[in-house]
Image (tube, rainbow, N blue to C red; front, side):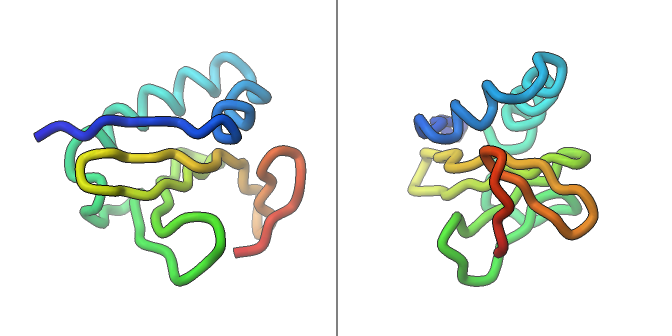
Length: 96
């Protein structure tokens, strides 16, 4: 069964702050990777240790999409960019 994908208002703002090309890449990959089996760990999808952001992370190149799954709804809570060990979400450095 296919999952419904929802972006929070905050995640939409994070996405909108990125270049159009990056937005398209992220949206296409989210659709491809999270529509089915969003809770199955893969090379680019992993369950995170306890943190205040989200229980799951999807890696898309230098970008990170943080999400939660509730039954058949995937809720994207944040989109950030990671350079080396620095994660920027909404222009602010975040530590997980």
